Length: 236
Ligand code: ADP
Image 1 (cartoon, protein in one colour):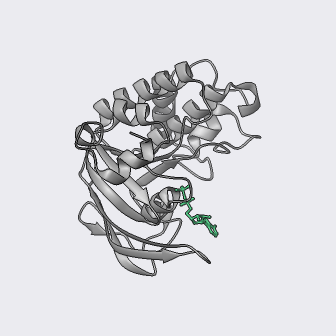
Image 2 (image 1 turned 30 degrees about the vertical axis):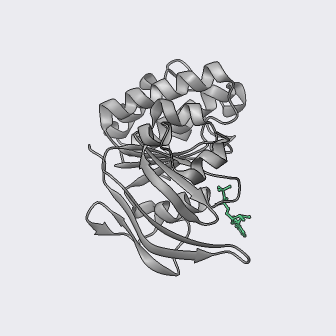
Image 3 (image 1 turned 135 degrees about the vertical axis):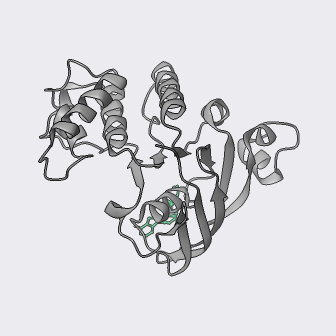
């Protein structure tokens, strides 16, 4: 599998008082960090790509396909949220299995993929546990494993490691970097941590007041010539 480019063209959308208008392109197979103030529209951007929200006008492209009219289940995308990712009454194995089949009618190939993803995320031996019997870091690993078994070219992560301590967050970032090296999917990760972005991202998307206020190479963003709006945000 390889990643697919993601493009939003004049995508407008609004909640009651909030309007967003997105124009942005993410190259296939890159890791992009999405940063910006709280309420700027970062989650909305991900939801528009995943199909959980539909644009009022404009179009969303994934690879060579216009997916604007396509529902979330049929988009080549998987998404990991900050929390409340897992079903409390289902085991680790079943939660991961949902990535393959919402009804958990699993084929042999599904079971092999699930076993592989559990091994890859360090969850071997924990298949039969319930989410309440796991640590916060383990729960996020399950969420990541569920995204992996979907084997989609675009992976969206909305502050996936925000509730974890620094050491655990570091481990998860390393895991994400390794997985990206193996699968080369296109990754968009929302984070409030400049260090996390610096560590994993090749490109940056800075969102402010419902727009992509700046975008470009991560080296540029963390160097002396960083865009003004981003410098203001991180306080340099
Ligand atoms: P961020 O992820 O950058 O913190 P969001 O994309 O979650 O920002 O939200 C952008 C704006 O849209 C915020 O002002 C937020 O209050 C508003 N918003 C988000 N979701 C909803 C919703 N379901 N209904 C109404 N307003 C919403």
